[in-house]
Image (cartoon, rainbow over all chains, first blue to last red; front, side, top):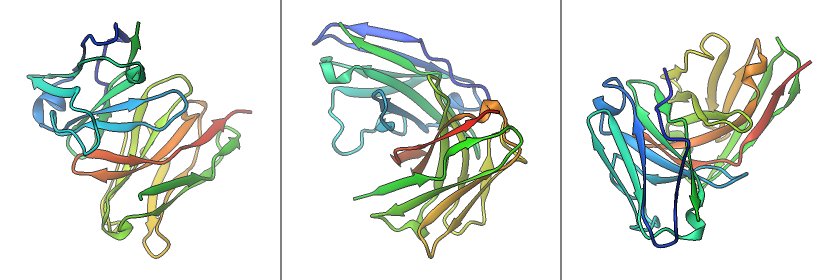
Length: 109
Length: 117
């Protein structure tokens, strides 16, 4: 049950795009199309942003998109805005259990 | 509106026990899978446990298996986490979460558990 690997940090200027990777194994990310992404602002609870690799819940801006190739999933935030500055975590189903990523802090320059 | 309100956190000595509660409202609790997820101070999210709607199926992370027990009372719309043999590394904010299909749809505000002598 090792955590999925994410880069510790990512950054971009307002209006730019940033992509965060999430690397697992064939037992989690690569084995299921059940990768989800969560945004967490300091001191707040996480919020679901993407589920089933690329689907957006109602109310999440279409600036947020997800994809997957093999054992690596990715979250792209296009048209960065100040309010996108937060920690982002991926998560994957791994057969009766779940695993989260190590987290990425996104900074809007 | 979905609401999840955790309670029961606090300071406990190593080896001690604590029971967390999560009061749910705004959705059909008795039809919903539920999870517990924790976050150590300044660290990332870690999945802890899940339970199906009628309590017949439970799963645990290896790090808590045999020490933590998830349960629920559908009549009270409440999820529980009984934590025994607590260790310093169990110190964290514990969140309950309403499960969607292989995802965590809604989260409570969390309750802090501190294990220290």
